[in-house]
Amino acid sequence: MIKVFVPRDSSALSLGAEEVANAIQVEAAKRDIGIELIRNGSRGMYWLEPLVEVATTAGRIAYGPVRAREVSLLFEAGFLQGAAHPLRLGLTEDIPYLKNQERLTFARVGITDPVSLDDYLTHEGYRGLKRALDMAPAAIVDEVAQSGLRGRGGAAFPTGIKWRTVLNAAAAQKYVVCNADEGDSGTFSDRLIMEGDPFVLIEGMTIAGMAVGATKGYIYLRVEYPHAHRALNEAIEAAYRAGYLGKDILGSGRSFDLEVRLGAGAYVCGEETSLLESLEGKRGLVRFKPPLPAIKGLFGQPTIINNVISLASVPIILDKGGDYYRDFGMGRSRGTLPIQLAGNLKHPGLVEKAFGLTLRELLYDYGGGSASGRPLRAVQVGGPLGAYLPESQFDTPIDYEAFAAIWAVLGHGGIVAFDDTVNMAEMARYGMEFCAIESCGKCTPCRIGSTRGVEVIDKITSGIERDKNVRLLRDLSDTMLNGSLCALGGMTPYPVLSALNHFPEDFGVSATEKAA
Figure 1 (tube, one colour):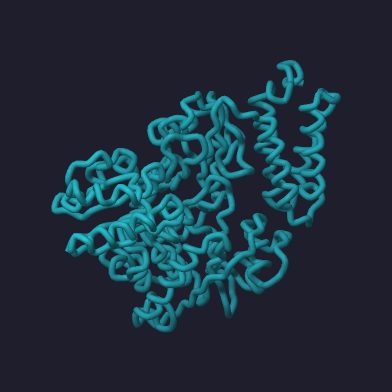
Figure 2: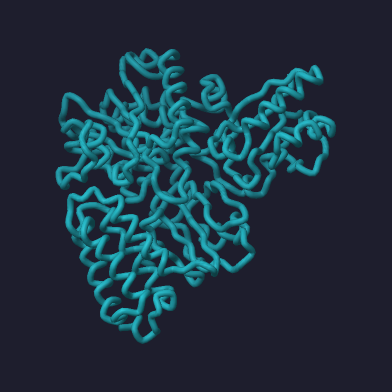
């Protein structure tokens, strides 16, 4: 029976994947052709969605972007045999955008049926957990530390150190919490994993539990991800049935339970302590630190909190070894980073690459330059609180320290591109306004500073005492940067000051005023 693959990914669905899948089934039935329709995850090449693949003796042949009205013509052309057609892209694995990546965390995404445990096991799934079950907890932590894995959620804190702290904390109950509240603009790698390979996250969290002695895990998922919610729950049920979750996992005598909890849409709950408050049923307010969550986290107990990509990177580390993972990357940035290309780009999508390639390579070799055909003027990296980088900084390598050196952050790996029609003063104002709307209100610099920041930017762009208000904006940003309780207020100055420093003309600021 011929296997045909149509993504179930929510972005592909928004582009018509469900209609295409239905049309393929109808057309196959009309022609009395037996097919097996598999709903896979997206390959992450969104300009080609819906991407339809057909399994042939030569490999999987891709066609895209396919519309429902084109399905009958595809059948006429013989696409089930991989025949020529204007939409034929050739072997999926040979598409340059995909071929030139290093897919470690995303090794199965787009290849397997996301909720098929058999598919997961066939494609090297659960090998990391099986190895971990034969190791002492400290040895698991050492393997993760050896890999050089750092938090992929923004702070880039070494994962092994965090896990070792929880391991060494004495407590009757410990927890593993996954931060799946992916709220940054231009980010979708967490969603792609949860919709396209949920078992890899489940396996990573289970390994984390084995590493520190935690017996309970929670995935804190944003409510705006209903497709991920369904996929996760279906995969969790399958894992329980097969003995990969619950009591006495695979006869090891160790236990780990896992469930999904939905957040209510507050951006600040992406901050780990605010997330814990919400998970406990309280209002999402940021906690004072110390104590750190690793010492006193969920319900006052030692808690691992990592984001989706961090935890989903753990299975391959345990399977192939920390040294294998560490051999990718540069400097202190080891392994790979799933980079999300969004905004004004010809080829938006996900690129998983080892650290070290430049921003320019991403924007042009993968992103294809601007969708509008105009010059790219700026990119924002790291979500709505990331710095705006001008073209003169496009040769910066994707590396945590290299970005810190230019007063920027990699964050969750989201890149949003803008062409030369963008008004950077408006983008800076949006940064302050975003903070004002999303602030939990607990600390004054964030709660009041962001509101005053919007007012000051309005005065600058209106030409009201511009020189004085530019200085005031800088002073206000300094207060927010150094006085805010968490990164929401503390990072809002990044987009504001980077826009002011690199694009002063959009604020009506002269070179003299900028220097002042």
